Amino acid sequence: MVHELNLRILPKQAYNEQSIIAYLREEKGINAGAVRVLRRSIDARQRTIFVNLTVKAYVGEEPPLQDFEPYIYKDVSNQPSIIVVGAGPGGLFAALRLIELGFKPIVVERGKDVRERKKDIARIRPEQRVDPESNYSFGEGGAGAYSDGKLYTRSKKRGNTDRILQIFVQHGASPAILSDAHPHIGTDRLPRVIENMRNTILSCGGEVHFQTKMTGLIIEEGRVVGIKAMVNGQWLMVNGKAVILATGHSARDVYRYLAESGIDIEAKGLAIGVRLEHPAHLIDQIQYHSKQGRGKWLPAAEYSMVTQVQGRGVYSFCMCPGGFVVPAASGPEQVVVNGMSPSNRGGRWSNSGMVVEIRPEDSKEFKIDKPQNQNSSLSLLLLQEELEKQCWLQANRLQTAPAQRMTDFVNGRLSADLNESSYAPGLIASPLHFWMPEFISSRLREAFKLWGKQKHGFLTSEATVIGIETRTSSPVRILRDSETLQHIRIQGLFPCGEGAGYAGGIVSAGVDGERCAESAATYLTRC
Image (cartoon, rainbow, N blue to C red):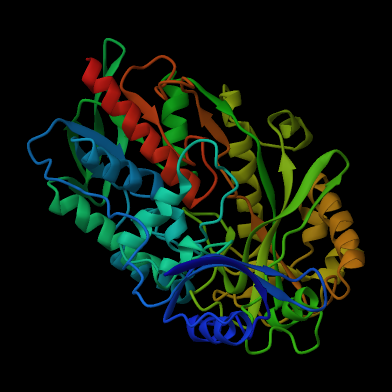
């Protein structure tokens, strides 16, 4: 017999399968041999914290190995080829969906495979420099592979987000992501999942080519028929029936190529700000209303902040409980920060992006050194580059990051010293309140004051403001038809995912990758 129940129980009772079974036996009189958690969320709004669960309890029978049918990937070695540019979540899910639909994906990725990429990332701290083709943004898995692996999305309208999570589980992610309210794989586990996805592509006859940098499209009579690429200093032409362009939000050379080639793009709003890092125990105390913090039974606490200041949204972004602040530059003369967490979220600090909404029309508010005849669609890209360079100069042309104590940032004074930090390349005291654009810094200061009143202890000298967070999303949208997902003028070109301006995170990029694969398959069927 199977019972499906909605439970509201204490964290100790919800800690693991055995504690849930014990609760059901003692409080509900159900002698379950096993339970399957369908949904899990924490309610920390009051001093007594509860865990909300939806569970299936199995009495006298075993639960199924998994609650979904595995997806079938058949051999496509001799099928028509579709080129997928980029091996981030958009590209990988596009490639897997193409296999399901009977097409051969040829994946080209400018960076290295996820294992080799990890070595280059590890060198950033001792060498204080970034490999422009292998870093936190470029390489197998995209920006998401080493920026936490959070899978929470509010975007449910465009596709089946449960399917994306199930495919991750099929390739080695924990089944817990199917039930958690805010699912999370963890930076330490996601690379193995990505490798397994690549192996599925290869075993089915698809191709994956690393260190293969797209430099242009091959277009004949308004139809894309392949790409130009650079491999080990040699030019290469890759032919395909269509191209899914999933290059990620940091491929600025791609945006410039599109603009120079007259391919329709437009500036897209984004958000810019800082990383704010607190001691994890302090965030636990604030969020769980207890001096003891999370205790034994609760995970590292999360938070979500949002307000309006002077007509623009100010909000937390990519909150990483028990995580690390990391150097996310993708080229020379840049300092950019991001955040990540391991699967256990057991680090000493918790961090979050704290960012201000920037709209395309706001570009006039900033002093940007525009090159002559610069395409206006790149205005916010230029703003990103300008701020990242300022940050690099503040950091003495290294990957150290300029920083202030949070209270000093709010009160407009240089920090005499800085807190310990998870940021491995190191911090340098800098007056972010002074050199950051007033449009951004003034709104952040007001938001910090407000949140300090709402959450006692949040505005504190123990917290560190670290600059600068600019890579929240793409600064450009590559225009496509809303129905066919093709570029509005070029047949066979399918701009995809976060880099094309149509997604915001791992899951939404995966959903968009699948949709683009389906549209590309329909396009080839009709040709």
